[in-house]
Length: 354
Picture 1 (cartoon, helix red, strand yellow):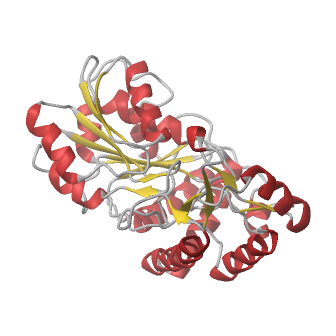
Picture 2: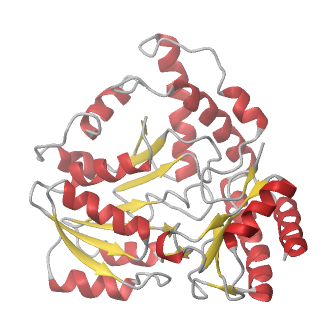
Picture 3: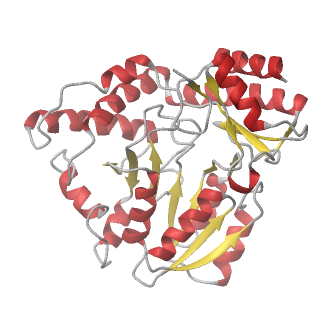
């Protein structure tokens, strides 16, 4: 079994994998409602929200589409903050949903700052801002808390947040920061196999959805809210994933939400120190992810060759750079249930091969 140090899917503990084999329940049964009814409050505690938390049988990309279709009127305007592959893709999803997209785009490796968002919002009126908290392709942590304060000054503009590679691994305060929709896939810092998305929705997001046509069916938040009132989902849920998610939530709450953020910061500091000594860091200081580190390949090493040796000799894997950054960078994940000792071991192996 290859141990994964890639940005996702990440390493999954044996006890979590075992929970996936739980015998199924009838998803319209009282037993299922009882199960879901005790799972969702755990997620609310972890995400620091009193709002709705919905469970999508999809990747995080389903959350992108749900956020756009439910919070932006048909023909409405979106300010897409773009700083890497995934924030760029979310903009293309908004366009595919028929919304007008204004692109606030910076060079890969840079953050989208609060000043830049403030400048864009001062010039035009937008129904929503799409913002990626942690850009997985570049290792940039965008200043979400600062941007949220800017967006609050525009009450008719909703804040839609991709927290795919930050949720449960980095500080995230859904209610305090005024996030209207926040989404993530569980194959990142939740440390589950892929196939499930967790999506939060504010009360005003659901209220706006009532006046928007063309919400579709599968990602209609009002259908999710209706089903959630009965502790169910509108369509068949990914039961094995939800059983495993329940265990993951228990583990997170036992560790402590803020303690988990601290552990991720400590792992990030360890990897950054190693990367700065051997190579260079790609993201600028002050805007570096706490769940994955993007390293500039300043030594011209064959990243593909290095990874093949890691897999052959140590049965583990890191990630090459994404898209245009392939071989120019590489990425090491330090999220989920990994511990500092796991990273120390990995970095020692890389040193041996280098």
